[in-house]
Image 1 (cartoon, rainbow, N blue to C red):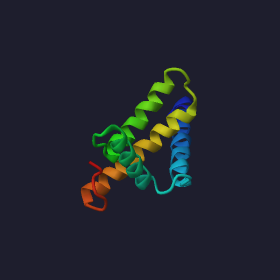
Image 2 (image 1 turned 90 degrees about the vertical axis):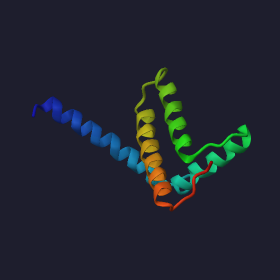
Image 3 (image 1 turned 120 degrees about the vertical axis):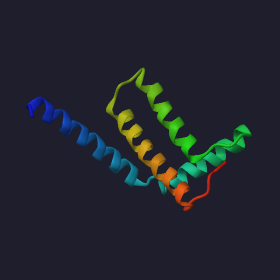
Image 4 (image 1 turned 180 degrees about the vertical axis):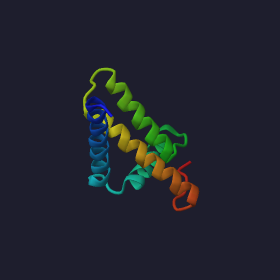
Amino acid sequence: MSANAMEKIMHRKTLLKKALSAVQDRNYGEPVKNFQDIANLWSEYKGIGFSVEDVGIMMILLKIARIKHDTSEDSYIDIAGYAAVTHEASNQISEGTIKPSR
């Protein structure tokens, strides 16, 4: 493997480690519970049902919109973190650990 390829792999690993660290930081409480709270608030505000998966996808879309104007690493880290939490929430719903928000 070339040095350039190794450098790219190391950069990916660093970015994913930062995303994991951000998800584990817990400034906003347990991530899936936070997504549930957001889904409930959005549902009440708009009068339509939002799921925790909807929250994760829309947060990712928000970051994609920001990337159009600013390609900072932070948005990519957040996208990876939102994807991980959305997947975790989806699994918990499938397992019956949490109830769907809708």
